[in-house]
Image (cartoon, rainbow, N blue to C red; front, side, top):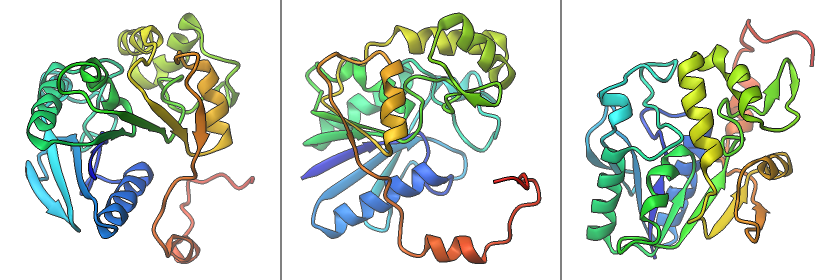
Length: 237
């Protein structure tokens, strides 16, 4: 099977979600599948390379070319809650030349694929929710130190202003709330908590959510035990 993974970030810019994508991609390659990861371009990585058997392509982005600094960490590119024309063009080109069997998306890069899903280049689409980003522009589903009571446009803009500024929070929230997420053929969540929060996202009514725990490589528990505890963590549990 030929699989196209879509993820905002990938090595060398990597965190928990990206490690999960890398782990699953490398295991799929080990099992005989052909896997390509399409991610956002960074100045630190080549446009086309192979990492541990996984082909990695890096897409252009108006959001990062014209409006840099949307992410608090400038080394990490940012994809908004709507389609990016340059990213969408690169996804379309990749699909037309790659003969992929399925697309598997992992975060907001999905929004540059949804307009293509039912076009000539479209392929069956699986999305994995690693966080609360389909319902919450902060991706935390938290408000005022506690759990969010559910997304509302005005409430979400107010809550997200501290992270993005009011103008960006308004645009990100409005475009996220406008989505109906048509074009997702199968939806998985990494935990029951994430699956429950997806009720706050606007999803097709007949789309079930299946919980599939996040994939991490062996040895992370040992790494956690021997890594010093950061001083900025709170003392309480």
